[in-house]
Length: 211
Image 1 (cartoon, rainbow, N blue to C red):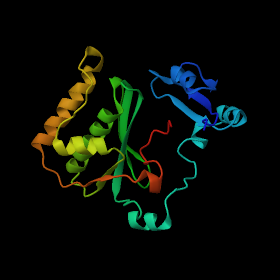
Image 2 (image 1 turned 135 degrees about the vertical axis):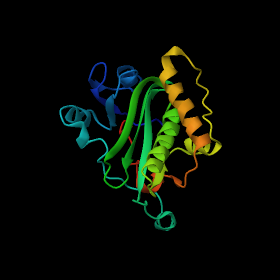
Image 3 (image 1 turned 45 degrees about the horizontal axis):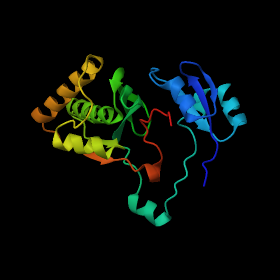
């Protein structure tokens, strides 16, 4: 079965506009700091979005879960006594940034980047450790939500198992990685790290909205 045609609106990129293939959209957003774009099912919808505020289309869409009522019951609802963290990377590797927000209000608590070269997994890892350090500093009992199982695993192992090689282009990112690993090895914490249930709750509140 062939995939349905999509159109891509680029609000912020090398050349804002509408593109009819993902590769064309990617060319306009790759290596562009804080690029803003989204796919639409029709050309008319993409045109309408281009002439509108991207905030009306990104992060505000109504979410419909595909799970059964029994599955939703078992998962339950998010614990809003928490912060949510996420990362975004334009390419792999590519320009990367990460942030943390209040899960309920989406108020931004911290943001780092964009960095010239990183990966999404690195950003997710750094975001969790940043959150851990912030909560410990504030003597807070909030928990941390992340949608990355990989990052959770790295934090538990107290190491960043990235395959990205150190270069001059990513020195700043690896400096942060070294600091994060050192913090994990030299600090105890009581914060609970929980996997965000995207299928049940929609995108994590810290999501950068570029899907």
